[in-house]
Image 1 (tube, rainbow, N blue to C red):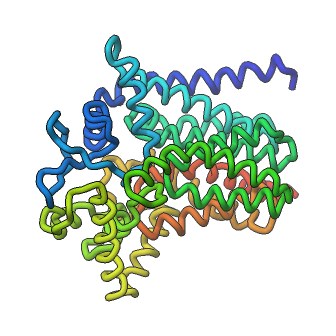
Image 2 (cartoon, rainbow, N blue to C red; image 1 turned 45 degrees about the vertical axis):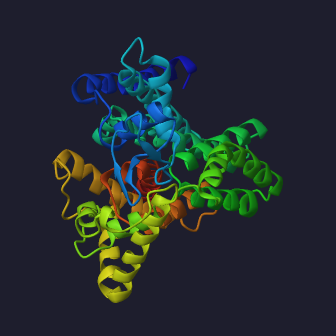
Length: 413
C-alpha cells in the first residue's frame, strides 16, 4: 500500500478512538474525586503527607479528611504514581478550571496514543489490515472506553504497558537502540510506581530479553540503573519514614481480602472490616501503623489457609477460572451484559489457545505467553477484579491473532 492509502484508515482508527471517548466523557465521566482518592489528595494538599489514615488517639486511626490540627499517618499501602498524577493537576490547574476534566482529557489522550502504539506493535509482524482490525476492536471494547473517563489508574497503566511492549517488540526484532532502552527503563520505573507488583514482571522481562534472547548484560545493567533512579525518591521517602527499604505494604490486606471464610472471587473487604475492626486491634497509631496492620492481616490470612488448604486451593482455582473466563458470582453492575461477556469469552478462548501455540516459539510471542499465564497465576493468589482483564487484553489480542492465523493455515493450507 502507498503511504497516502494508509493514512485514511489510520486516521479513522485514531479519530474513532477519540470520538467514542469524548462521547463517553459527556455521558459517563467522573466529575469529582471519590472514596480513597478524595481523602488522599485532600490530606496531601492540606498536610503535605501522602496518607489516608488520621490518628484519633494513641491506638486509633481512621481513614478521614484531615483538619489542620490532625496528624496524618504516612501511607505505604498504595503505590504513589496516580496520587501524584491527580495532585499535579489539582495543584497547577484547580484555581482557574475544573482539574477533574483535565485529568479525564489527559487519560483520553493517553488511551488514544496507546491504541496507535498497539497498532504499530501488530504492524511489525502482521499485515496492515490485521493491524487496523484488531486495534479497532481493542479501541472499541466498552470497558476500555469506560476506564479512560474514570478517575482510575487503569488507562494510564494500559498506556505504559503497551508502550513497554512496543519497545520490547523492537528489541525482539533487534531494532531498538540506547534511546529506546532509556524510555523502556523509565516506563518500567513508572509502572513499578503505579503497580508495585510490576517489579516482578520487569525483572522477568530483563532476564528474558537481555540474558536469554539478546545476551546483552550491559543493557540489563543500564536499565536497572535508570529504573532505580526513577523509583529511588519514593524508596528513600519510605526508608526515612519506616526505617526499611520498601515500595508498598499491602500483601497481607490483599491476601486476606481474597482468602477468608466469606470467599468471593472479587474479594471480601466487608469481611475484614466486620471481623477485624482496626480500632479493636490495639495497633499504635504512629508512622508504622499501616505496616503493623498489614502484618496482622497477613497472619490471619495464612492461618485460614493453613487450617483448610484444600478449600483455599479450590478457591484459588475458581479465581484462575474467573480470570481466564468469567466470574460466576460477580456483584459488579452490568458484568453479565452480553456485550461485555460474549466478547470476553471469545477473546479468552482464542488467547488461551494462542498462548499454548506460541509457548515453544522463542521470542516476543513466547514472552507474551509466559507473561499472560504468570499474571493469571500470580493475581489469583489474591482476588480478581473485572479491570484486571482489561490490563491483559492487549496481550490476549496479540495471542489471539496467532490462534486465528493457525486456524487459517490449517483450513487453507
